[in-house]
Length: 272
Image (cartoon, rainbow, N blue to C red; front, side, top):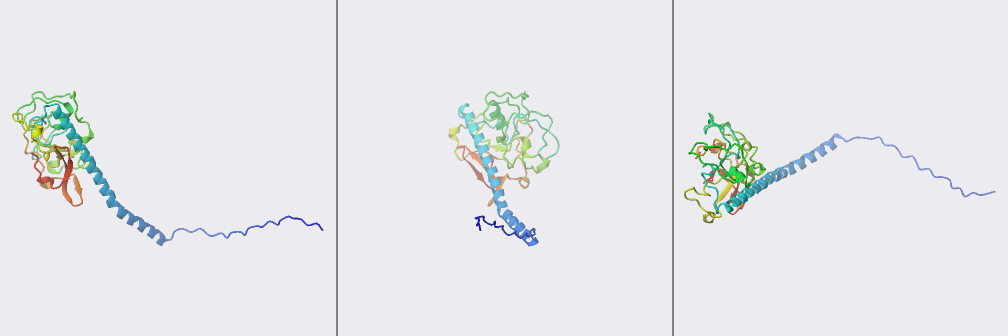
């Protein structure tokens, strides 16, 4: 009798098939509750981070414009732009903008549509000054074509717009959004003194402000020389651009030494 070494194959036992099943209602509710809890925890942090990012961009904008003002002063015997050259108003529209501007009460339209040729935006974009006209009047020959020879800070730059303030609606008198004026920053008229008695930079204190977020003033008629002290937003209608925890009515402010910080109680600040 012959023996063979063949091994008898071992077949695995058939696995029992289990019927597939979905999530129960309780399991779904638990998952949804966990997701909702995570969103509730993370959403405030995300919103705070977004607000802080806008604050940082705004500070960078103010610092950049401040550096451009210093560059301008280096080419102008250490003088910052005088208030007459700024149009005698702390807030002007972007250089070259033409618009029909309502009166201070929000009613009526000032006659004439001249390009904006006053303000810090015009000076830093053009590197030159427009011929001055009489107070409350446009210049003798308002420029229609803007050809820059020495651009310190271009008017086309997005740096003139605070990301938090550009989309806000100015409440008083049915005004436009701040961003539609092309500039959301106001500037101090005291920095350059007057044409008769200018104040050189070495007489200024580091605490003197150059620029700050604007929610207090509306631009006067474009191309007109001021003063236009009546073009302001009522304090009850002002919308400060930055609202952070523990700080109300907050806005950024740049100083002579080019330091930028945030200050509260914007309505209490003096622009001069």
